[in-house]
Image (cartoon, rainbow, N blue to C red; front, side):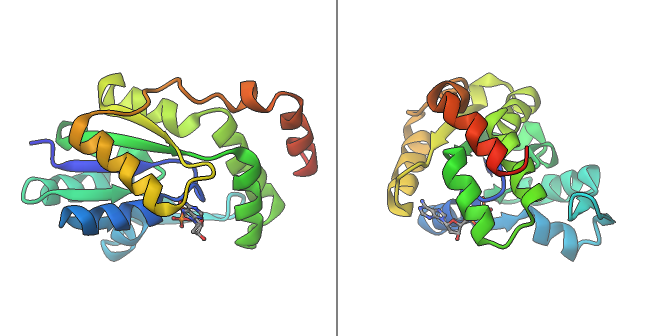
Length: 191
Ligand code: DAT
């Protein structure tokens, strides 16, 4: 049991880049939850306001349970609730300085409202809180990817997975780090 490694975090922090590299290094399957949901007809209605499809969380959880009962996988998702907790070995919540995140999401061509929504999620630790609530403190680690190239992020993730060495929830506080710059950032995003 416990054959899922979850890579979660706000959209744009680098989940897919890390999860793919991890799966390759560990020789296990990479699963992108958005793709899995699409392939299994588990995308519900399109949420116009948020510019994203709503995922059938219970449906995806069931599919992941079937897969995880047979093999080890790395799951890439910003919705940690899709992971069946009893199969999750650990979760890494990737974090990124909100200023960098805003830059990246704008570069992706996201509308300002979506950039702001994601930057606010990152500042409020929403993915981290969801992970702790869903999986429990012991299984959750934080990895701050700010200023680190992908190979360094990969090595830090491997340390967590292989040795349990890494930052625990509560180690990152963007509000404390950015201070007044945070208000400026949110204002620049129309917040
Ligand atoms: P996510 O899956 O969380 O949305 P991603 O892996 O698609 O994120 O990465 C978003 C963008 O950032 C993409 O253009 C690749 C780039 N990126 C990812 N990890 C990075 C890193 N450690 N350093 C610099 N750029 C990175």
